[in-house]
View 1 (cartoon, helix red, strand yellow):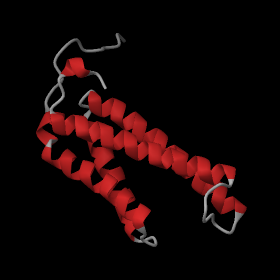
View 2: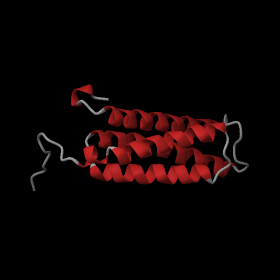
View 3: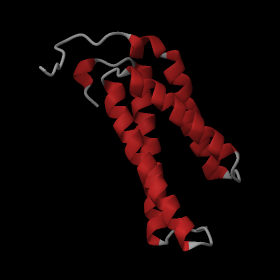
Length: 133
């Protein structure tokens, strides 16, 4: 994170929690892809699809954090949608201790994003990157 931007504490917390969330999804994807997950799906195809989706989710989350740091409004709304989707998908699955931790990691940044909406909706000051046509 770039401290020279002086992000408000809740915004910094959002970015950190999103990166932690991405790390969890990445680890899950790697565990599934390598066959080291303790409870893999019965089908090899399902296991590989879950690995790809988990790693993809991690990549999307990391990308969203980069755009959130720039106060990108589309990234703000996409992040809310992704966190809501992941929260719902986690609830409809079997819920154990790890799932509760993941639920919190989806819910806390979601709530903080709603709370800090004004910060993300402010226009970014500084030079604009325009492409001459």
